[in-house]
Length: 271
Ligand SMILES: C[S@@+](CC[C@H](N)C(=O)[O-])C[C@H]1O[C@@H](n2cnc3c(N)ncnc32)[C@H](O)[C@@H]1O
Image (cartoon, rainbow, N blue to C red; front, side):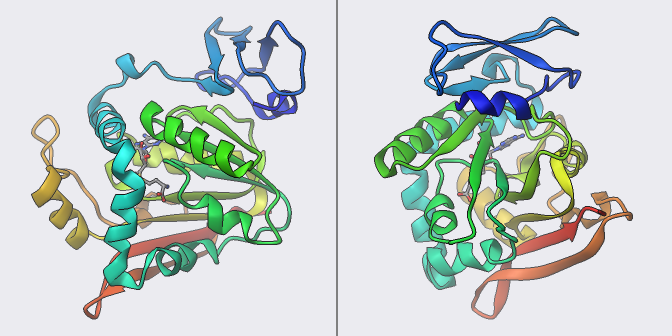
């Protein structure tokens, strides 16, 4: 983590300032601790990743899916490549979403960055500025770290939950999310958090699979297995976006056999 990133961080529970303790005082912090002076929580930094959750304490769908993605992290990149093949290939499938971002050399946050499969497309854009990524799966982040180290990309990564982002309000010029929200424990909280950390006037882009594709994944991996007897709702979360947001639109994406298999929801935080 860059030392300067501390300016963007806050406590994910109470949103108070965090202070950094590390031994070396270098520009990048590989090992150290972050402390909240208000609620007295402590978070560690390991291998350059600030960790804002304890995976053992996760509950509900977040626990189920953090474990699921930990288990499949080694094959996730290959899996997505294969899955996107009948939809015109991975580049097309990802660019359909990423091209909606306004990359004006500012800061972009990818919520649920996974193993970093969007990074090659973000970094090929001349408009890309600083990139930050958060995910709930330590396994996915471990893959992402080796990917960014191999390519030498300057990306700061965080282990955390979308429902409680560890960033100050208005920190990012674009906020992106692909592929996880259908199964978040708290979709509304996650959307509210994406809006909170976005700069006023900036764009927020959220994409995931349609119910039809979720049904398919359910057949192979039990994605829609009821949680505490409750049916999992994978409808487009348009109704969870506050009406005060501007330029709201939803488009079908990932077309295959004449049908869309994903949705892309985008809107602008009022200036
Ligand atoms: C289908 S993958 C998408 C990864 C990446 N965005 C991509 O486009 O390839 C979904 C990701 O969401 C993450 N995830 C699931 N629940 C989450 C939550 N509550 N907060 C943050 N990330 C979460 C998973 O760990 C997983 O890496």
